[in-house]
Length: 504
Ligand SMILES: NC(=O)C1=CN([C@@H]2O[C@H](COP(=O)(O)OP(=O)(O)OC[C@H]3O[C@@H](n4cnc5c(N)ncnc54)[C@H](OP(=O)(O)O)[C@@H]3O)[C@@H](O)[C@H]2O)[C@@H](O)CC1
Ligand SMILES: Nc1ncnc2c1ncn2[C@@H]1O[C@H](COP(=O)(O)OP(=O)(O)O)[C@@H](O)[C@H]1O
Ligand SMILES: [K+]
Image 1 (cartoon, rainbow, N blue to C red):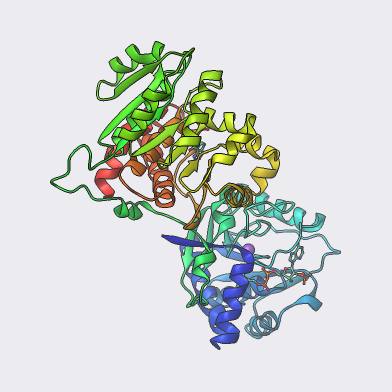
Image 2 (tube, rainbow, N blue to C red; image 1 turned 60 degrees about the vertical axis):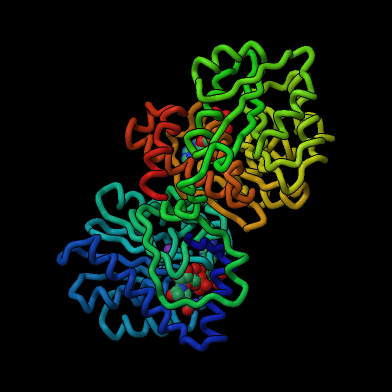
C-alpha cells in the first residue's frame, strides 16, 4: 500500500516535521536535493551540461541545492532563476548564496522578461514549482514550459523536482501548462497529481525519495492510497478443506435479448476470481447460449412479461452476493426486478451499468442504496446519477465519489483511467490498468470480479479496492500478452489466473 497526498496534506507534513518535531528544514532539503542529484547523475553523462530551472520557493531551493551537489561531482551546471526575487523563501536565499560562492553561473530573469533556453543541455532539472503551485501559470511561464518541451524534443532529458511544474499536486490538473518530464523525484509520499490524469502523463518515471518525514497523528486515515500487486496477498485464503459453499455463491442479474455477452463475461470473471458457484438470472432467450458458453454456470431464465418474484426470492436466499446490471437493459422487467432486489435484498451487492442507468432514471430507487451496495459507474453513468457534467466529474472525481457516498451510503467505484473507490476504508486510487481496457465488456469483468470477492466474504470496501486492483493488474497482464490495441475484455479474464497465482 502506498499513501498519496494532496498539497495541503504535504504542507501539513512539512510543517509537522519542521515545527513540531524540530527537524531543520534545510536538513530535509539536503536529503531531497541529494535524491534529485543522484537521479540527475544517472540521467546524464559526466561531460554533459545541466540546466537547473529554479522558481523562488522551496522547490527552487531544492533545485539550487541539487545544482551545488552536481557541481561538486564535477558536472557542468547552470542555473536559471525565474520569478520575483522579493518572493524568495529563507531557504532559497541560503541555497542561492551557497551556489554563488561556489561560482555556479546563475541567470536571473523576472517575469517581465522572456525566459529562453540555449541549446546543448543534456539534462534540464525542473525546480520551478512544487506543491506550492497556487494558481495557473501566466503567459511567460507557459512560454518557459514550451521552451523546455522544445529542448526535450531536441534531445535533452527533463527531471522534475517533486512534481512537474504546472501539475496540481492535489488532483493532477494542468494549471495553464506543465513541464513534461522524463522522470520525477518526489519527496516522502507520491502526490495524487502524479497518479491521477492528466498529471500522470507528465511525470515520466516516478521515484519516491524517503527524506525522513514522519506523519502527524491521525494523518494516515485522511490520506488516499493505492495498492501494488503485493497487496493481493490480503485476498481471502482458500482453505484446503473448503467446498463450493465456502468460496461463495454469486447471483448475477444480467443480460438482455441484445446482450448475453455481458452476463457471460461477468459470470466468467466471478468464477475466475474464485467464486464457488455462479448463477445467472437472465431473460429466457439467453439461457441456451449461456449454458453453452459457460457450462459451469447455473442459468435461470425468466419471462420478460412476467418475471417471477418468488423464484427470485429463492435465488437470493441461495446467494452470498448479488451483481445486478451488466447488459440488463432498462426495459420495464429490468426496472421491476431491480426495484424488488433493492427493496428486499440485504446481501452485499454490486450495481453496475443498467442498474445504475435505472437508478438515474427512477430516482426513488436511489433511496434504497445503503452500505451493502457497491456502485461501479463510469464517468458517463456517474454524470447521469448525479446530474453533474462529465467535465465536472473528470476534474474532481474524488469529490464526486465522496459526495455520492455521503448522500447514499454506498461504496462508490468511479471508473476511469484511474478509478477512485470511496468506502468506509477511505479513498483508494487505482494505479494499475491501461488504455487497452477501454474496450467493450471491461466493466462487466470488473463487476464479476467484485461479485466473486464479495461472495468469498470480503467486506464491501475491501472487495471494491482489491477488485479494482486485481482488474487493473489483469488488464496490464493482458496488454503484455496481446498488446493494448488487440486486447479484449475476455483477455483480461484469461489473465486473472496468472496474476492471482503469482501474487497470492
Ligand atoms: N518545507 C521544506 O523544508 C521542504 C520543502 N521541499 C520542497 O519545497 C516545495 C514546496 O515549496 P514551497 O511551499 O515554497 O512552494 P513552491 O512549490 O516552491 O512554490 C511556491 C513558489 O512558487 C510561486 N508560485 C506558485 N504558483 C505560481 C504561479 N502559477 N506562477 C508564478 N509563481 C507561482 C510562489 O510565488 P508567490 O505566490 O510568492 O508569488 C512561490 O514563490 C516542495 O514541492 C519541495 O520541492 C522539500 O525540500 C522538502 C523540505
Ligand atoms: N485508459 C485506461 N486506463 C486504465 N483503465 C481503464 C482505461 N480505460 C478504461 N479502463 C477501465 O476499464 C473499465 C471500463 O469499464 P466500462 O466503461 O464500464 O466498460 P463496459 O461498459 O464496456 O463494460 C473500467 O474499469 C475502467 O477503469
Ligand atoms: K517542479
